[in-house]
Image (tube, rainbow, N blue to C red):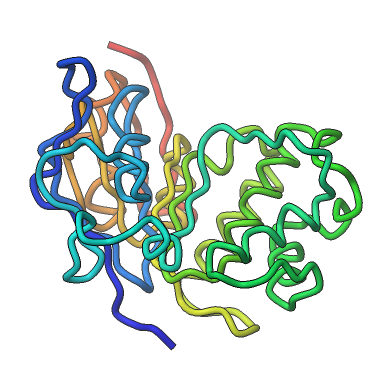
Length: 263
């Protein structure tokens, strides 16, 4: 079993056409923790996730997998350690759900075995067994989001990066997927998969408060706060970033975060 793996950035900066998108940013995500990445639209969350996934080649600063700089690693090497779920999901071929999830095994250099135990486990965890024989181009947006998360879980990598995996999901599946991600990080799970470091982009602050071990708050491409959920999800941090007055109650379970009015 691999243990102690981490992703980190040091002075990471990303620009596009002379417009700064990110940084400088110093973040760390370790195996065994679920980290929520929050912030308003355009804060730089997706750019940070893509950078950590190895999908951004033009950047300043450093990105590390343990002590190894991304500049010295091939895409294949990164794919063995990092699974990435993008914000937008597209599948141009009329494959079945089971076939799509099984393709996740390719990242590890494995053959595509549709009946591998990890494929069954991923389908089950994301409530996709009932969908397994349907072609992906017949699915709703929420169903496809669950399938793509299952595909990432089938990779069985130490690190998982998910960009808004709850978008389009109903409340039942939002809660169940967050519970799955938390179990994966904490190894409260059955099967042969390894404990994961999970970085997930969320817009629901109450779900971040309820499930995340740590929260990273971003605004205008910079990290504004990074710490325990109870330390970051307080009015002093989130009000100025979102431009909203929030009422926050950490004395109840689950914690309550209510947006009152914009300012």
